[in-house]
Image (cartoon, rainbow over all chains, first blue to last red; front, side, top):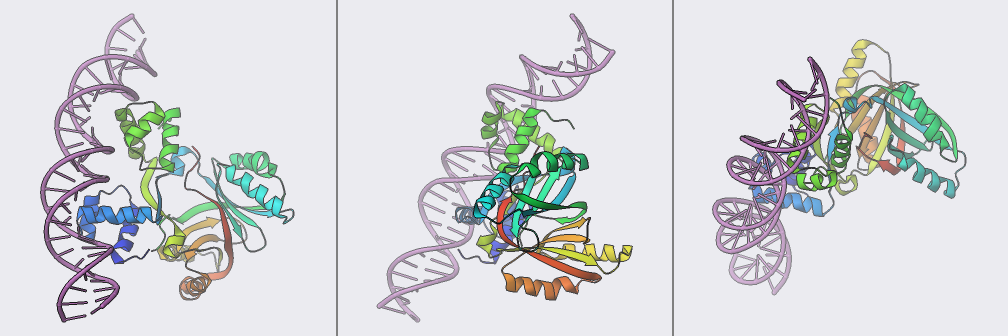
Length: 152
Length: 152
DNA sequence: TAGATTAACTGAAAATTTTTCCAAAATGAA
DNA sequence: TTCATTTTGGAAAAATTTTCAGTTAATCTA
């Protein structure tokens, strides 16, 4: 689908706050409520807008500890890759898992309560997954920026 | 604030889909609409729910290229740190910037159109920021898992 | 360019949802 | 147990979403 400047502005607004009413959006975009409504529906139907979610403040639910974890597989066999990716996706502590270029095969973003919980996660969950060769963890000291808004 | 099992379930549901109506939620939670409404308001007022956003599919807006970028500062002077963090946060291509432990100082998540756009971003934007010592980039080959839902 | 076709827009009405209000039930502390 | 507080449920009110019909604007073709 093709976007005009209004669609882009609309996506920016919804990526920032999806709870705005169509009336509020219509003011910001100088459009009627119905026009806004139909543009949003088009963005949803075309799969541009994937979903709407509530973002939770991790500190409030005692998940303040974030780590990035590099993982190397023991061997790069197709079977191992498939199995690892299936298993790691099941771990709720793993918010992200990316297959990446470079020295390691994967980069994980892990969110838990504290260092002790992280140790437990590593020992009891992550390293229980088959075919892991080695790991290397980096701990987040402070979060400088963290947004879900993709520049459009 | 304290959570019971219903609050936790509610947070899970809203982290998955915030566009569900209170009636739908009330069915899943075996509660009245008003009870759901009050619980959500409490979670919002206590800052547990930070915001509501639309998640956009990056492929649909031509931002399919994701890279993680390690950065080391030239010197670890307070002034340099502050300046760097301020500057990097302004870059819309940088969705995340974490100050981390380990060999490098920062880990960035960068989202752009393609490798060419990434090169341009590095040359014209990132390395224009003062006090950067060295960088090391890793490219995402495939996204195994990517969620905003924190386990509660 | 003119005419036709399609897409996008507007305002009003209808449908649905959110929010308020009040009374009843549950919970907790003294 | 009793009093006070919180949570809940149902109904009414307020607000929002969604539909609808008619108009305007934009696009395309001949």
